[in-house]
Image 1 (tube, one colour):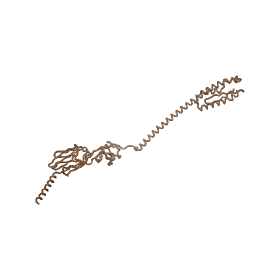
Image 2: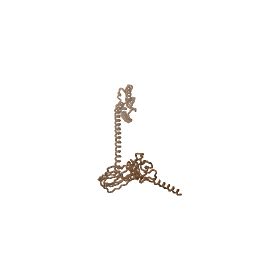
Image 3: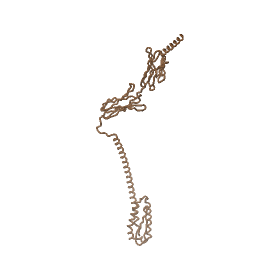
Image 4: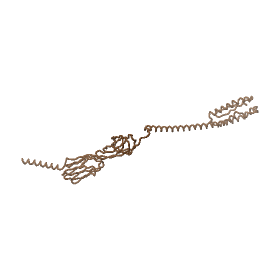
Length: 379
């Protein structure tokens, strides 16, 4: 009985000793949260007690660095370690070089054969651009104006504020988020300046001392002495002048066309008048020759056969001359010539009747152009 009790006590002592030996090393202080900018270094410390055999560093669940009492096991130059010993405590510092946005996440420090671990969170921020429309601005004195400033490419978006270095009668600003890619924030400053000076747009990163700023030189001009036209009036005048110019061009073109057509008409009329005068001069001798009987004589009255001899050649000559006339004689010219011939025949017929003896009349025909004119000569 006593032997069995001694065995149980020995077993309990051994178990207690093993427990004491297993818990002889532990994590005294684990890593702490850190926030860094892209491109900088991130450092995390893990302090353990004496007796440790292996320290493991993990980023987002993946072991990236291991530390043993013999040295450091490095898998990537992106992660390195520095070690410090102070008394019985050992401190391992993991360094992340050239931090990128992909490095943001949970950091863990753990010991081999121990369920204890220390964890922290790595936040990565990006300083983007701060944009203003212009570095110098001219405004009218005592007239409200707006000045804008935009932060692009920041992660997270910064807080924008204004430093007003000009005398103003009123000022206020507000920020608007713009869901672009990447997101941006726009700050609008509304003020009524009374003098010249500088306006500064300031962007501050949350959690860090990083900041950026842009300065605008504001110049105040005196108000206009005369009343200026509104924008819509200026636009209306511009459109009116354009339409007026187009109308003037169209009228000039129409006038030139009319003048050209009138000149052509006058030239054609002059040409026709010249042709009419030429035709009249050509026909007048022939018509007069046909109305007058130059072959009449007293001797020919007793011999009709002889007097009829010279009239045949005269008729043939008249036909030949009339056949040579141009065929382009106008209707008006032919009517005028016909009227003149008719008048002459009408005047000569009474005289011929008084001179004519009791003899047979001789009839001759003269051709004028496309029409036939009858002349009657009494012998």
